[in-house]
Image 1 (cartoon, rainbow, N blue to C red):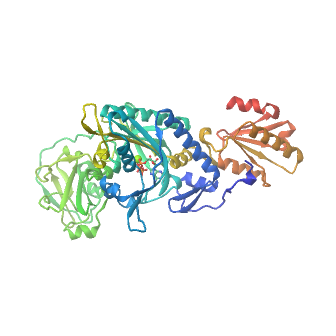
Image 2: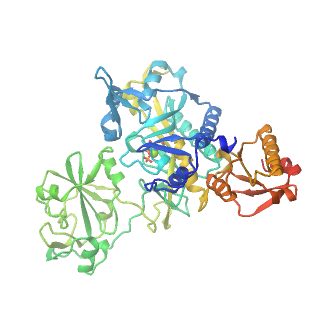
Image 3: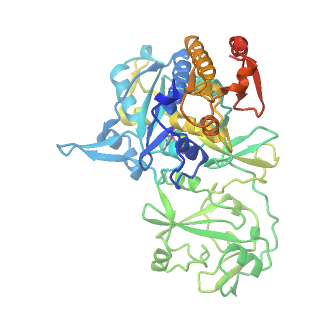
Length: 566
Ligand code: ATP
Ligand code: MG
């Protein structure tokens, strides 16, 4: 490819709302164009990288015996009603009507459609197992489409679905897919962490995520160096510190003017935040939910939402609290257990310790010496706490650490929920009808590309891993008005091109500065500069994008050099 023919230009001024580094770099390099919020067009260079990732995924899946299918993005809403997911997906589901007023959705994922396909084609145990996949566009009306290809509203996913006769088969298929995924990311040149994950609205039991660690990823990963426990903080568990039990003291009401936050409270009472109870009010399903947790911990909203089958939740507003006779800033469950319109939840952290401090449910007041169950009736405790760095590992009691990352892949054991709700059964050897066991496995193709850039860049631009780089060689001609330079460049370019090297030749009438800056920005692995200076030594100057030093290679030894690093 000659740069002068390339569709797409590097950009000097880019939108200021590009928050993530991969988004900024892809816009600056002219790789993608925003068409609407969370909707992007790929320019040729980005699409080449996208296709490379897609091909690696396709090859590895084909090798594993999976079969490629293609499903429609447009789906009848009744499929989603039958699987009970129209509601759980909520506003994320794009819905529309056709000219006859029939309701449709744009698929955010394809469990419903694939189950329908399998239902029509599988009769007996002889037709199983199956592993089917597609690489398809998905639509999700994300609350906050952001960071370019990292979180789009229209994006490409490789989604695979497995179908087995029994749990044993599903377990094997799932483990096999975890290995296939590891090999996909290894072939993309991208080291991933495989972490325990929450399975979200898609449901199911076992679930793992493939995380590319980056400085500013959306996901927080909790890990233990000593026993190798790794989990997304959405799911991570930790060992609760057991608080000592003191003699139970009398419940006391204390006047606490303007003391509202947990920090204010512990300062006022000259006590550790561990001795306080924090109560936070949420609205879930139009119901007021009071979550109480030890004051030094934070609430994990994913764990909380899972108790309500993945329903959306939000903090209750002060108006909603006041309407229900609750006092923002001074709330606690003490003395409120008769109020039936509130759903009370308690974190496991409140299982130990006593003589706590909590809100007084009156203006400017707190209780001290709150004791469970004497002052608060608790029917059950739940795990509702967010794990954090420094907490203890449940497996080996070592201290947990944390890192940031981007989820690029996700595998779930779905079990029989879809096959039962959508009627995908098979006849077993003994003639009985059984629901098929399903697994599902996703990789966001565009997100892999963006996350790769998020992980591999410097202040000058992208540093593509060679495996997914759109071009391997960026040939730069400096001073192309000079015949010797122009001739050398053309001959090197033609030679490389004829020998199947993926080479882009910057033949533009631009300054050396512009060309070299663009080469750094676009980030292809090998930069080759031909100039009057390099030709004095009958050489090209080579600089690997991942290294800082350049070196000369004689033109007649170029082929040899390139084969040595291929
Ligand atoms: P997230 O938690 O980031 O919203 P998810 O868990 O809802 O993602 P899955 O349903 O597990 O996503 O989708 C499988 C894969 O598809 C994800 O691992 C990710 O790589 C990709 N993906 C999901 N949502 C998006 C999106 N909005 N834009 C780009 N890729 C996405
Ligand atoms: Mg996921």
